[in-house]
Amino acid sequence: MVYTLTVSNTGADDASGVQVRDVLPESLQFQRASPVGEYDALTGVWNVGWLAAKDNRQLQIMAKVR
Image: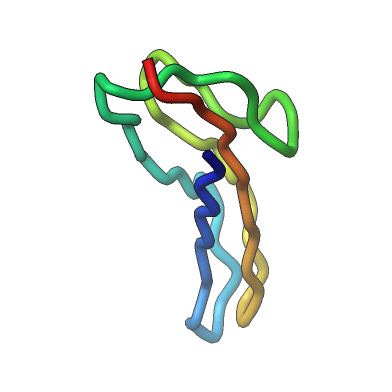
């Protein structure tokens, strides 16, 4: 199973310190995320960091049913 998260900055200014939180349901077991190293499966926090105005980023989370 693959989840795709998209975060967008629709504003006119750049954003810094951007984080997205998405905790997987207990019925799913985290396998990996892409890009690697930006998603913490324990807390569900995706550290995006800096996001330019009118830009977006995507994270894919791969999980399997327990």
